[in-house]
Length: 395
Length: 201
Image (cartoon, rainbow over all chains, first blue to last red; front, side, top):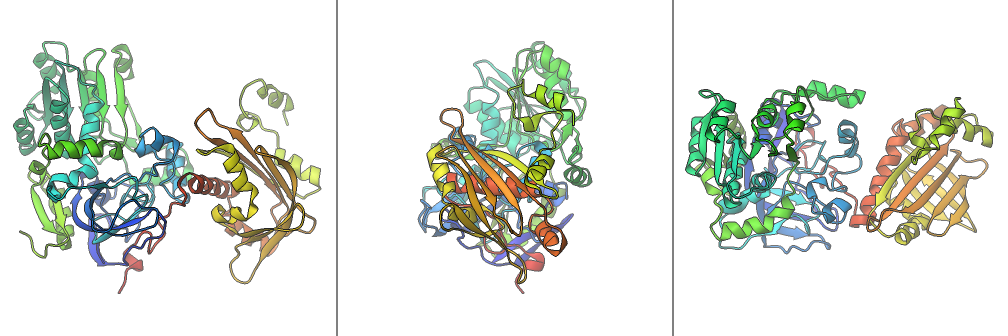
C-alpha cells in the first residue's frame, strides 16, 4: 500500500510499504478514505518528539471502511468508521472508569519502558505518534490495522459525509473535553488562548455547554476571524496587553475559566534533552509554558484552568502562588476520545456542531508531503488539511 | 549493612523494597544456597481479574510461555517437577528442571531449580486481592545465579542485561493477556507496516 512515512526533520515521503494484517483477535483492518494532518503532526515533522524511527507511518486522525475483522471484533466489513487516535483495551481499570487515554494495556510491553522512565507510568498507545505511544502505524496511508476494534471505532451513518465526522477522531472531542474541563456555569466568561483547530472547537463547545461569553486570544488574523464568526470576542496579543484587556472586559473580575489550547509550542520539548533524559533517567527538557503562566495569572479567584495544550517535559516558573492563593482548579490530560464520540456524533447529526468550517484544503494522499510543507509554512491561512485516498489530483 | 535502619522501615506500612536502606537480600539468598552470587528481581502488577482466575492461569505452567518473552516452553512433568526451555539464538539450548517448593491455593507459588540447572534460579509469586472491584495484585520475586562464560553472555543478551526490564515486560504481557485476551503488539511488518529500509521495492 501507499503511506506517508517520516524520515527526519522536514522529510516525509510517500512510499510503498507492506499491507497491515490481522494479528490479534480483536483487530480490524480499515481502508482509509479521509485522513487529516494534525497540528501535533507538525511536532513530529519538526523532529521535536523523540523515539520516532525512519519509515514510521504518521497520522492519527482518520476514517474509512472496514475491510477485514478478527474473530473478536464487533465490526463488520463494509461499515464506515471513524477511529479514535487513542488506542484503548476497554477492559482495564482505567477503561472501566472511561479514562481511555490512560489505558494500561494498549502500549506494547516492550515500548512502555521509555515513558515509564519519563513519567513514572507508561503512556497509552496511540496511532502514528512515535514509539513512546506504542510504535503503531498511523492512518496517513491506504490501510491501517486497528487494535481493540470492538472498543474504539464508531460506525457512521451513510447520511453524513467524511468531512462532517472525520474530526471525531481527535480534535472535536479534544475541544469538547477542554470545554467540559471548564465546568461552565450560567453567566460564565471563558478565555481561550490559541485559535488553532482545538481552540476553535473548544470555543464552539463552550457555547453549546452554556458559556455566556468566550474571549479568544491569538495573533493570526484569519484564525481570530474564525473565532469571531463563532461568536467569540477576540484579542490579538500582538496589539493588546492580554491580562489587562481581560480584566477590563470582565468588569475587573477576570474570566471564570481559562483554556490553554497552545501547549508547549515547539520550543521546549527538544529531542536531545529528552533522549538524554531517557538514557540518564533523570530529567526532561524544559517546556516553555508561557501560556500556562498567563492563564493562571488571568483567571479569576476560584476559577477553573483547562489545559488541552500538549506538554511533554518539565515546566519552570509556574505561578504556583497565584494558583494556590486564588484557589484555582486545574484539569488536563489527553482526550478520552471513546467517551465523547457517541454524543458528539449525535450532535453533528442534529446540526448542533459543525466541523467542516475548519477545513481549508483538501489534497490527494499522494500529495501529503506538500500538505505538511503548506501547513508548516502558512499557518494563518492553512487551518486544516484533509487527505483523500481516492483522489488522484487536487480539486 | 545497617540492619537497624532496615528494621525501622518495618514500622511503615510499606514493602521492604521501598526502604531507604536495603538489605543485600540477593547476597543473603546466594549465601543461603551456596551460590557464587545472585541477582534479585521484584515487581508487582495489578491484574483486573478475580484472584482465583489469575492464580489458576499461572498455576498451569504451560501458560507461562504465552507471556514470558524468552521462555520457549514450560512442561509439567512428574510430581512437582516442570521442565523449562528458554529461546536461545543459534543451536544453543538453555533448559533446566524446576521443583515446586510452595503452593498455597489462590495465594502463592514458589519454585527452585534442581541441582545441575543451566541457570540456578528460584522465585515466588504472591497473589493478593486488590481493593474491592480492582482485581488481583501479582507480586513476583525472582532470584537467580548469573552464569559466567558463553552462557553468561547469552543470558545477558536474552535478558537485555537487565532482568528487571524483562520481568516488568513479562508481567505487563501477563496483565494484557488476562485482561484483554491478547497481547498488544506493533511488530513490523504486519502489525505495523513501516517504510524506509523495511519498505517494499
